[in-house]
Image (tube, rainbow, N blue to C red; front, side, top):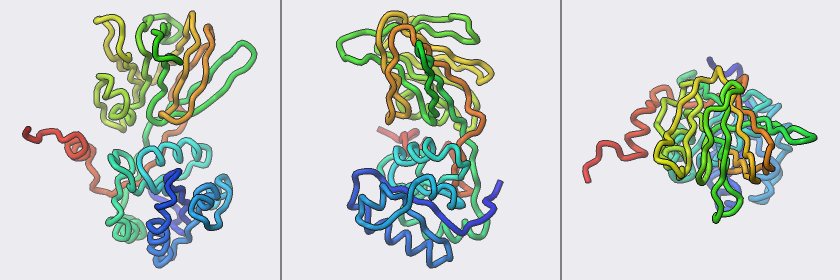
Length: 286
C-alpha cells in the first residue's frame, strides 16, 4: 500500500509543550522545501501562538497525518483521526518511541524517501469498545489498551469476563488490561503480559495484581467478542491511558476488533525485533 498523494501533511504537536515551537517550524520548513504543504491543528497552533485549522478539516484535507511528540501524541492522533482513514507518521520528540520512530535528525532524509516511494505502511489492529448502560450506549476506539480498574486505591475490583457470551472468569484484584498486540509493550508488559508481534490480530487479557496465583495472561483470537461486567462496584475504563469512562455495577463493556486498523508510516527497513532489542535493552550485559 502506498499514499495516493504526498502534497499535504496534517500535524498535531505534543500537548502542553510550547517549547516545541522551534522544532515544529524547522520541520515545517523541511516539508515545504520539498513541496509538501503543512497544516496544523488549531489546538496545537494556539499552544505555540500561530494560526491553525480545525482538526476535522485538517484530517479531510491532509494526504497523511504527522504527530510530533512521543507515543502518547501518536496514540491520541490515531484515535481522533480514525474515521478519516489517513496514514500517520510519528516523529519522536519524546522519550521511548515504540511507535513514533522517526528521530528529529532523520526527518529530512525520510521525507526524501517518502517522495521516492521508499517507505511502508503497517496496518495495526485497533479495538472498538461499546459501553452499555441502563438507558444508553457509548462507543470508543482504542489503539493500545483498555484498562478496567478501581476508582479508589483502597478497594479491590471484581470483573466478570465473558467470551462469546460465555462466562469464563471472575478477575479479582487491581483490575484487568485488554490490550492489542501494539499495546503489548505498554501497561500489559509492566503487568506481566506477553510481548506479541504488532501485526498479529489478537486480544491480550492481563490481570493487574490478581488476588489469586492461578490468574495468568490470556491471548484470545479476534473472532470473539469480549464482555466485561463489574457485578458489584463502580469501575473506570481507561482508554490508551488518556480517556476514561465510568461503569456502574452491572454496566457491560463489549470489546471487538475494529473494522479497520491504524495505518502507520515507517521506514522500509524498520525491524520490530531490533526495536525491542533497542528499547528493552535485550541482550545487554549487566
